[in-house]
Image (cartoon, rainbow, N blue to C red):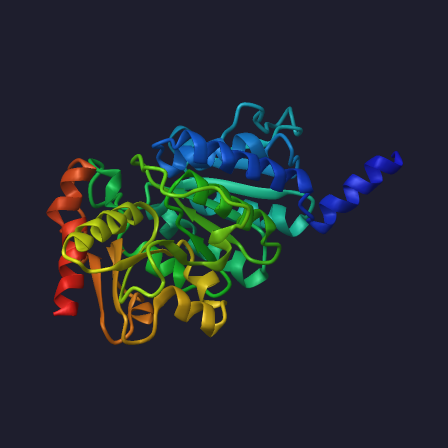
Length: 347
């Protein structure tokens, strides 16, 4: 083994991420800020992996029989088979728990960074292994797509409503729900750099507009940040993932009424909870600030962030089978509903 090979082996065993990964992600963010694609975040995730996997040989991807839906395979990854152990992609079959358990084993062995995909609703099947990832402090990355009623016609059996809350209840698990391609890139960077905490990337089936600029800082690393508006505004509209675009539209509606609001993107409760009190107050305002949160899921746990003048716009039960746009209107998860709650609290 050459000196260069020994150095690379030692890096991979330590779990260090080479600088080339951060450089690739920064270039991707700049391109997205220029191109402003309207991609589903599952598509954004695949595009991020297309720039990560070539410069990070540590990654081993896979999916529990949903490769084409999870978008976890990139062009340069060959399948891992019984005759070719050099492949970096595993077709696990319909074995969600086995996939998660195998990824735990790989992470415990060291030298590789496993990631695997299924639908977010199927975290029920791999919950025991996800809990063990968190308990053992392993860098395992769960790519969970179709993250809300926005998946549409598959209906309530496949539409997760309680799953974000259930995952957020697991200690030492980082749940990351990005709003666009730029936030998706930042969340992937956080997951890769999280040496002793597993991550769940909750990603959409439906297309989303680009709502972010690039910038040098990883804003998702703070868990939540003011995406639009003046921090001195008396109203906060807080959302994650696909609902951030609704909060931005609600801000425009309130502006027509002379009500100033700031929009907060909150991709990670866990990271935001780790910030100091001053930063949290800057983002959420003081306890008297009007806060309206929106997420296409049940509101369990959101009271933690709403303060004394807060409201939640989201799901109250299971979903239904219809187009995503029709479902959001049917369940009242709209910009108009967010603005109406803010007006009610302000009156």
